[in-house]
Length: 172
Image (cartoon, rainbow, N blue to C red; front, side):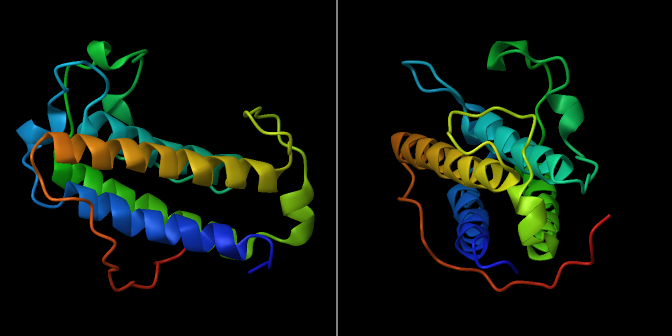
């Protein structure tokens, strides 16, 4: 793995566990609940993060079919969603996308990371490495939201416990 991407891959790896920890002990109904003041639900945010990892892998040249993409198809806001994935579906899709992304990050060369990307994010760095960096921050931002919502639902704080890793099957 290229040295400049190694700390970002470690952050994605940590965030993989943090989302799983945030979903622990929640029912599907609790995860779909919106706070009284509004905002997104945990289910919506977890779907969005899973979709974001699929997006990143595809933009890096390694597309993986997102098994929960149909839940967000043609959705502009959370209010447009008519059917929700179960937390088990989200966990499975998250783990698949996360293992895939780690393999992708391990394969990228310095030259590939330096290539410009057509995607524009709120960052000065418009290279593939800049995109990887911005979306790592995006992961963390939404995980903070999920952790906050979890506490508002009366659940224990998000745990930083780490999970054992299973070697990914490979990149599609």
